[in-house]
Amino acid sequence: MLELNHGFRVVDVHARLDPTDEAEVASRGRETTPEALERELRQAGVIRAVVSPGERPAGEGYLRANNAVARLSVDRPFLAFARINGSREPGSRVSSRLRNRIASRADHHTSPGDVEQYAYDDRFHGFTLVPTTDGLPDEEVVARLEDVELPVVVQAGSAFPPNAVAETLLDRGFPVICSGFGGYPLDRGRMSDAIDLLDRHDQLYLDTYQVRFRGVLERALLEHPDRVLFGSGAPAVHPNVGVTEILTLDVPEDAMRRVFSANPSRVVPGLAPGES
Image (cartoon, rainbow, N blue to C red; front, side, top):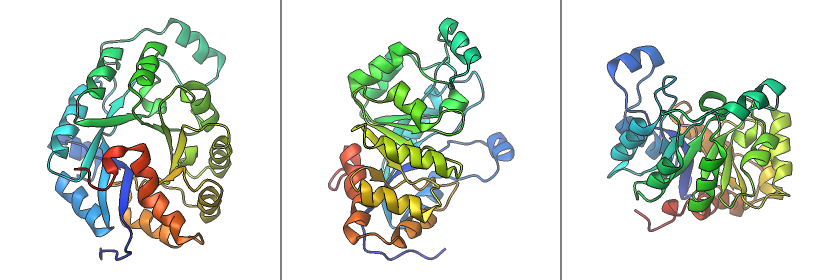
């Protein structure tokens, strides 16, 4: 794929980096090495990217995967985010609420100590949470996230919509980046709900991962130009796709500069110019 030549400084808050072996490649499909991911980002003009591991088997936890991603990020244009999990189920059903009352943290779940260890390890710059596959952390873990104040990228969706993100994680003192405008996959209504939440929550941000609706992107950038961050979703999506979608929007050039660099750099300081 040809390299883009757009003249913007672009940083990315949503990429995946998996340390894979042959068995995983056979079961998961396409292998993406750190070198391949770096090459694809460079083709899109992305100079730095937040990376975290993909889903691990049930009961395994993320400690080893997080440490591997941090190790693979050394001397590369990557910032490692630690992926966290928990014992609580997302959702507002009565059955979920009842199970959450008696849920207890297992050994493979993220503990408050894990959060503190990641936060004070200079290899990690924030956290990633996918509640629909990994569960929600308990109140003790959320309180520790509040203490360390690092950004958390959250994957919302039908089982954990933007309003659930607000009820569970917002106004706790740390930045929350709602991935895909909270409507992945392609749920325009939830994306609109997430944009509405920006009026009420100062610590909420939205990343552009797989937001395919021009009108939704343009509305968010025009109404909240300081709260939208570029996220490509690489390697599942080539970063050229996401960059091109922003470049073709009918918004001022300054709004593009904000979503590509200024906004991500403010929320994740390691993405700022001059950081290494």
